[in-house]
Amino acid sequence: MNQIEAAQATTIIGMMLKAFPSSQSTMTDDSAMAYLFAVEDYSLAAVTRACRDFIKGKVPDRNKDFAPSAPALAERCEIAEGALKVEAYEAARIFIEADSELWRKMEIVKGNHSLVSCTRHGKRGWFFLPEEVAKAEQVALPPPVSEAERLASMARLSVILGNFTETTEVNIEPRAGARVCACEGDCQCEPEETE
Image 1 (spheres, helix red, strand yellow):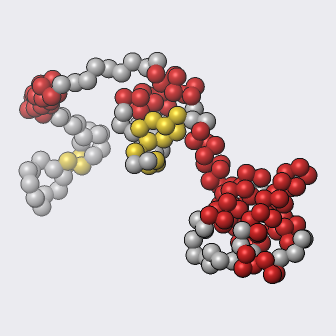
Image 2 (cartoon, rainbow, N blue to C red; image 1 turned 135 degrees about the vertical axis):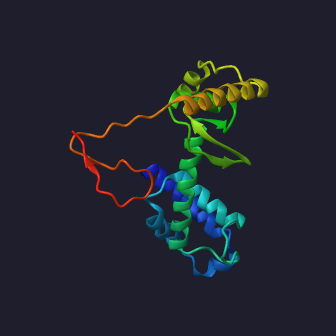
Image 3 (cartoon, one colour; image 1 turned 180 degrees about the vertical axis):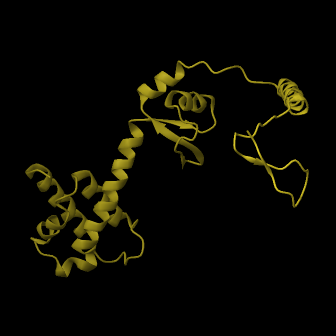
């Protein structure tokens, strides 16, 4: 945080502290500066969001009548910083719903048929860069196979596999020097040596 941002953060923290009248008796002019030490490693946007969350009462498991401590504000800034990073990541990308036509094209472009997905707004999918999406949109998917075509292909395949197993004989010749038994089934004879 630079000096200008630090001054803005101090103002925002001061406004937050004034929003809790029950804490006014313990606040001094330097209180906002003390809080600034706790949050100086975070962005101004994260500090602003954290202060707003406390003012609006959106922070769970705390007494909403009193101002937060400096460590509590820092903890909320860390949460806000993470949320801002996720929002920036998602804003720079395009969400593609899983199992859509564009999703199947993306699988082809990525060479991966088990792409990472998450759920956003009740829909499963993932965020992709615009250039990746543009590349995927150029892919032509093969036409869908009808149920009748699929069943016909399965029938042809079963005929081919059925013919293969019925007509194919497997002839295994023993290697030279191996001991081979001429009896079928369980026997007690001495196997003969092959040449």
